[in-house]
Amino acid sequence: MKEGPDIARVAALLGDPARANMLTALMSGRALTAAELAQEAGVTPQTASSHLAKLEAGQIVVPRKQGRHRYFTLSGPDIVEALEILMGIANRVGHNRVRTGPKDPELRKARVCYDHLAGDMGVALFDGLAKRKLIESNINGVALTPAGIDFANTFGIDLDGLRAKRRPLCRECLDWSARQSHLAGSFGAALLDRFYDLGWARRIPESRVVRFSDAGEKSFRDLINP
Amino acid sequence: MKEGPDIARVAALLGDPARANMLTALMSGRALTAAELAQEAGVTPQTASSHLAKLEAGQIVVPRKQGRHRYFTLSGPDIVEALEILMGIANRVGHNRVRTGPKDPELRKARVCYDHLAGDMGVALFDGLAKRKLIESNINGVALTPAGIDFANTFGIDLDGLRAKRRPLCRECLDWSARQSHLAGSFGAALLDRFYDLGWARRIPESRVVRFSDAGEKSFRDLINP
DNA sequence: TTCATAGTTCGATGCTAATCGAAGCATTAA
DNA sequence: TTAATGCTTCGATTAGCATCGAACTATGAA
Image (cartoon, chains in turn purple, blue, cyan, brown):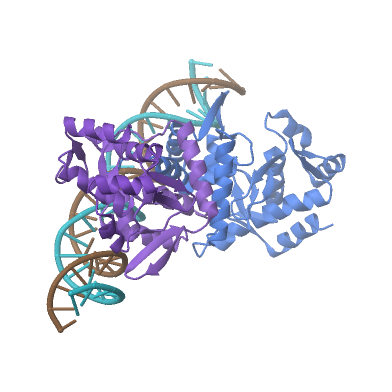
């Protein structure tokens, strides 16, 4: 019988986990590339491409071509509103981020998001740097403060080298599990690299888990708790 | 990977056509029974039961037992809000009630909804009766006016017999295709029965289509256009 | 009690859509 | 030009879920 999809069509577009994760990531208001969205959703680029095609056809997102990237943004404030209300409902009925698997806790604690640190420790890093006034967040985004620049240099990060790339130095990135911002951008990536170099943490192969050593985690805590 | 459904779970519940139709029907604010919702969705009672179980588990609807019926209502104003926004989005992106099949036009024009007339002609009937001040619609529902009672008697409807049943005489029922109200309740059902008796229309077997004869449709138009 | 109605549960079926590997474009850099 | 990167298309697989027939439970009516 099925006379009219209507609501159902739109809702179904938001109703797939991978797509929902992409859209949640886009709620920061920033334009993200297909590859970034694939990472956020935890799917391969092919799958993400298929999802993005659907979202584009349904006019939930709009693409913007720039160079060889395709940046996606939400198609309008009504989408944001819908997502917010759905979040509220999910929250009310207790459908909060469930820890589905046994290995989930590790992912929630610390994982790579694209190339930077995410999870609880990613959020803690962002908050800690902000509390130490090394980064500053406003409507336009995140930026290093003068104190932050000093810190970066003494911490062994080549800021000039990073600036040479086109990629923005600092960027906010909404966290799935914690639903708060963590630090992305080339500086965020450089920080994680530095953690690896210092032996604080290492990446678990075939997974997105970042595992800190005991000593590394202690150093990390010292870093963000002045 | 799939860390968190969250939004996706709720949206997926709204994203099935059958469920979306049920929820749209519930947006009138009235409590509807499982059987009525099955009719609205165009599925069998078994299927509807399965959907309602899901919606109940997801706390989208709440059941209320009364006699041997189960009445369902939306679980809160946030659900209504979500549905409204989704309607708005669907409208904006042009996902309006599409006519999917070749036999669809007939269904859109006139069909049974449970046991009363729905579709364009159902809506026209409701509007016509209201314009003739035979029924009156307010927040509490719909009711026959004194003039309406006279009309019913002369039209050959046994109002006292209808009143003996527990079922409400008049009820509003949201129309899928037209998204406006049509007349339900025992009076609505009695009207349709009378149309059959008068030979104005007949029900097509194995379908929900109500087919009016040419003369019958003319009489119908006269009835609603004073 | 028996019968009818409202609703659910179970089991089987069939369709849809998500997923990924592999290959193909398209754009940029060297 | 070649090489590399970003993204898409194609094809095959798989899994989930909507759907309905049949049987069962529960409530109310006679």
